[in-house]
Length: 269
Length: 325
Image 1: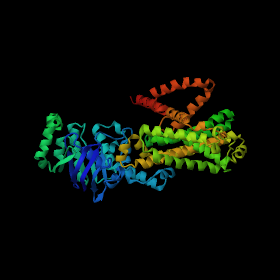
Image 2: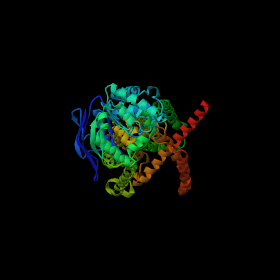
Image 3: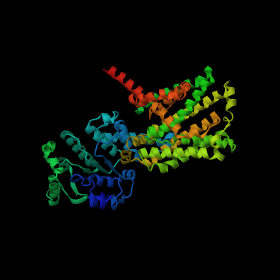
Image 4: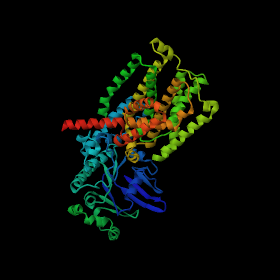
């Protein structure tokens, strides 16, 4: 569904992502993992058009989207959520989801001023699309509450609903379980499975190995901006390069150390 | 504000406008009427600033420059080109819309504080051009003897009013049009996208909003409204100098907006009404009036950062909370 080839970006002299060739298969869950600073979030920012790559290309459903702007990428069917709970906390849950539907509407300033048929259709369409997205994430009953009043998990769901209401084919989740307790994490995993069962393709960046191992069909491992492995969880878990990367960073108090000392991880292991 | 709350408030507007329309029939002094006309004109300017700052979250300090362009367009076209006011007025609005769009094309390459500084520079340049282009704008002498809109005096007399009364109704109609335009822009698919941009540009972008295109249109609407007020102002006061087009005016309108409540529909009118009337009442104090304004502003920022509208909503919320308890 999504193919990146030779993808790279340089910030000054630093290669944040370097010559990554990988693919995300339709209807599956692909996890991007790697130690801190491996370039995972940068990789997402490149796909979603936030950064322009300095080399390589991105192809989505047969179309070259390398040079597209972010909103155009959303228009092609790739939506994303952010690492932190980035939503509009002052707006209602419904309004958050309606904002995500904007790319599917065409009404502009003139339509607004003249209250044209297009404006009325788009407004109704936004409402319907947003409600549908809220149904999918289980927030339909919370639609009129301010988004900031929801729990951490609820706010994550708002972020996902905002992405879903743009009617994406591919959903990019940047650390969806960050800041969640074990129970919330399990709920989230259920939600992601439901979405994929409904025909969505999901790619996620995640630190919690329990979530990655429990969910992913495919894992892409990045290290120092380069892809060092791709395969099923079993394949990747036995890959010497991956073990080396994680143990190497463990010695410096990196990601692996975080995982083994995290009690909620132990609970799921 | 939720759409439901907006709908509830929508009932207040017709009542307010009807009450405002009754004022001249009570034979107020022409001084009172003059304050009314000025409040309405400056409220329109504040509504324009509210579109770009209150809804989109971008502080444009060139706003008074566009007010000036609208005013000078009417002044120059009627005085020097012999145009009818009723043609010159929309021409000024159109020019401001185009120039605002053009400014946006360049200015939106900057963000945040840089954008404000950039537009401050543009505001200064607009004022300087108006001040130095003697042959077109009258330079330091300004423009004098701009005629009232043709037909307005006759219409006023027909209903037994002086010219100021006629201007009062014209300003009221202009204000109503502005409020309707701004409300429609705000509570629409387009307006929701502006609020999204205000809440976070990167988030809006990743939600699929074409941020640049929306900012350009917000700027166009904002400057068009400023020019709309400017054209009316020119015909009302009949003379003007370049001072009114500078950043000091922009900051004054900003103050009105902050006092009223940024990003609200009532705020621009409320803030302008309170602050303009207050400054007229304190005129006898001359420069000492800032001894009143200064502390007042500090208190406002400390205790009502959302302006008078925010203060009202907080008090209402507290009262509602007690009822529940």
